[in-house]
Amino acid sequence: KKMFEACSCGTGGRNTGQPNCIPTIKSTSRIIVMRSYANDGTRNSIKKTDFVNGVLPEAFIDDKLNETDASKRWYLTSKINNITDTRAEPTTFDIDGVPFITNQGARSFAGSFYSNLGSPTYAGVLNSFSCFQNAYYEVSVEGAIVGMDGGDDLYPIGIQTGTLNAAVVKGSKTEPNSVLITFAVDELERDENMIQIGASAIEANLLNKRGLIDVVGSALDTPTITATAVRVDLGFIYGNFNSKIPFEGLTAADLSYDGGTTTATVFNVDQSASVVVSSVTPVLGSAGLYDLVIASGGLTTEVISVALSKNGYEMTAFTYIIP
Image (cartoon, rainbow, N blue to C red; front, side, top):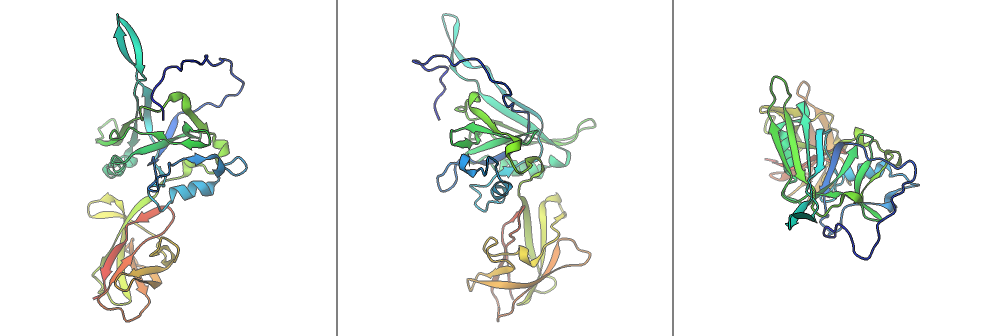
């Protein structure tokens, strides 16, 4: 990126005529947050080579939303309301009373997630990005993707590190509860470099997509854990103190020790070996509880790791000990 320059010496002004039917960037509906750079050092972007016959495939979008490498994943937010996205007046320095422009004004973003979207838990989710060098794509109300023109790459818009913050705004008699997200756009981003991928060139409808949902799990001591059977409790991070929203619909194929490459498996930590899951049975009348039966093999006093691999969800693996 280049430092701010109001003009470049040695060049003339650009011509001011415009052709017909210039695409217009509409207001923002939600944003896609991501790391500016992946762990392998590559810069996250959408490349022209990602298009197939001029269209960005839905499979490309789904792969980004479900990416197992968190440093390359797209984190699509819920709908944001009451967005303000404005640039302040430029910074000036007075010389003999004349204000000379020394830098472009800061661009700030603010928006609110209302009602059930504005839970304190969601504020914590958004604040989890505050420690990284992040960037974002805008998703317009038409479903277009807005970013920064990089020639062969559409780069996400840089977020000034250390400025992202999400705060809970308590509801009142006249207003619902909400979470307010604010951040400053990277000072090196230039407004004139903003450009979009029109909704007609995106196979997926991003207005109907959602980011991954966090799932938490644990093994129960009752009924007694055996070498081949265990009862597990899976739920979301959202809900009440003593009753989180349960994760329903688990199947054996959703369990995988290697991120979905080998399905219907758990992992024996002590033997460094996968173990086949024979069956998964929901506990009648107890949503989120499942009885797992795993293959026998003389397992005793060993640590078993259980991991979920299912599109749309992510869960940190949990362990239990076979007594």
